Amino acid sequence: MPEKIKILYVDDEQNNLIGFKASFRIDYAIFIANNTTEAKKILEQHPDIRIIFCDQRMPDKTGVEFFEEIRLDHPHPIRILLTGYTDIESVIDAINRGNIYRYVKKPWGNEDIRAAIEESNKFYLANSMLAIKNTELQKAYTELDKFAYSVSHDIRGPLSGILGAIRVVKHLDTIEDMKEMLFLMENSVKKLDTFILSVHDYYNIQRGDLKISEIDLNTIAADLGDMYSMYTNAKNVSFSATVNQNEGFRSDEISVKLVLNNLLSNAFKYQRKDSPNKSVSLEMEVDKGIATFYVKDNGIGIDDKYRSEIFNLFFRATSQEAGSGFGLYNVKDALLKLNGNIEVNSVVGEGTIFKVTIPSK
Amino acid sequence: MSKYNFIVIDDSALDCFIAEKMIVHTGLCETVRCFTQASDALEYIQASSLEAATLPTVVILDVLMPMMSGFAFVEAFEDLPEDVKERYTIVALTSSMNKTDMEKIVSYQVVKKLLDKPITSETIITLLER
Image 1 (cartoon, rainbow over the protein chains, first blue to last red):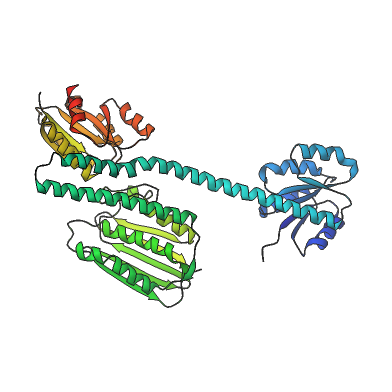
Image 2 (spheres, rainbow over the protein chains, first blue to last red):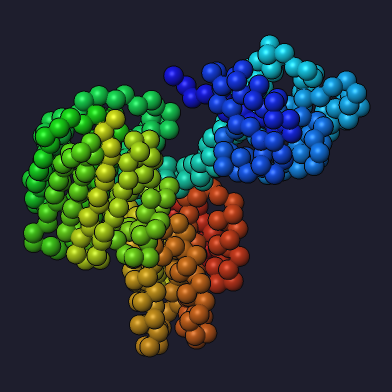
């Protein structure tokens, strides 16, 4: 059941307050105050109050004055004035100045109040939805800007490399040179492909819905082991995965895999080329409803000064290997959706440990 | 025509290779050195500043690179002694179409020209003729 709509009623007459609360407490969460100072205190404590009813005639100040005062600090609640016909001039004035949403004539009937609450609630929801959409739109717009910026470098870069290579081939004399050129061209194509795949991931995290299911970490460990056997064989990096799962773990499998994949591929990629015992390990455990993952490597490490930036879109801390500057950004975004967390511990020239925690849903 | 020394700075190994081949192909090149990290190139320039270089050196500089970018390189280069700086001509090279970046890199006094990637022998020759 959804939470009850929170309503504040301000009136100097105690009887009205009691009557109001008695009539509506079943359907709504009612807060009452017999003066405006008390009302402001309640508003501070409950910023999620949606609707405020206020009597116009009170000894310390009028309802219109009260609404005008709180409007700046509490712009979101819908303001409704309770008043008799004699005050109609001030009511019209207040409505025109935007200080109140509507008014209810005194003495009020339960149906008038109920109708006012329902209408106000719709208005409140529409308004807050608009604010949320606006924030989302602003974020999407900023990211689109970054995208447009990176497109020229990250897509055109590899392409211009391949184009340049095709022209150079005309001037090459030896097979060895051509082979080297082809190898470099292949890397350029891979780079472009990685970028496009990351864009795809990015889009999926942004727009995709989570599909929560029971996840077996042993299966994931086996899948990842298969996937990275290419690295362990060809590049001489040892890989170990340990699983300690004695209870269920529910989450979005695709997002969890995306997180582990990005961290592992980084761990494999950013090794010290001359190191004799390159190794990567993955430790997974589920305890008290929380899954914890450690991805450890003894690679190049991350310099302290880049630590705060590694999760930023398109940031790269090294020119070693092909990277798009997307991976860790996608990781952070996916974890945000899973309510998870990530910590990094790294020493340059010794290695890096990423610790990820994801609560079971 | 007289010959030149070349330094290529680009984080992409392929782009370095292309530039090197195109430079050699002009027939105007005495030596060419490639660096995939701008900081290494800077160290090289600082170290070789001790011995008097005989030939003027053209530096082909990529703009967008991780760690030390083309901008950071140019700023560090500007702090070098005058008699070192005058032996080098910096030419920026980028695939970026971002106006802000392009305007920024040519705004440095030491950057003589901005070229679009990929580089060709013809553009290098035209460059050297001027």
